[in-house]
Length: 129
Image 1 (cartoon, rainbow, N blue to C red):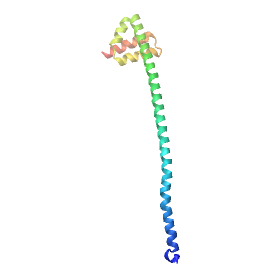
Image 2 (image 1 turned 90 degrees about the horizontal axis):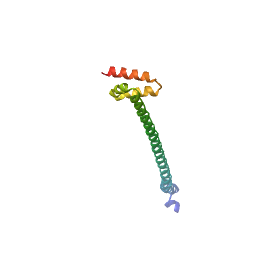
Image 3 (image 1 turned 30 degrees about the vertical axis):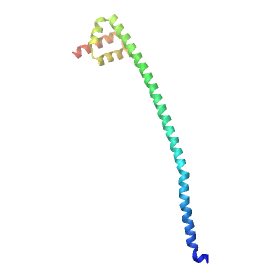
Image 4 (image 1 turned 180 degrees about the vertical axis):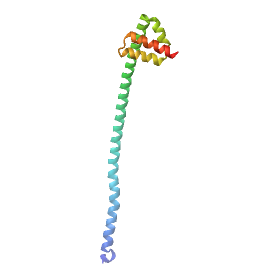
């Protein structure tokens, strides 16, 4: 009699559909925390990467500023020596554009003799006017 009221196919189909309707939300509830924990982990990794990059950037800036200060000290020393030993050449040097002064200083840093530097200063001065 129950078979006439609840046919076998209908009952299994209803049970199957109700099982699926319960299974899908349960899976979503299980997967959601896993995905959320991966996102939190990836976010933590990104934050750590940014922190390390900022620290490396700050370290590079510090080293760069130290080398610039050292270069400025060397340039001041070069200019003082030029003024003390070769006053006339120093006056021409001061009238050169900043870019030319920098190039003359770099030439001296690379090992050019003072005579070569003096010739360069005079050539640059004569060609700039």
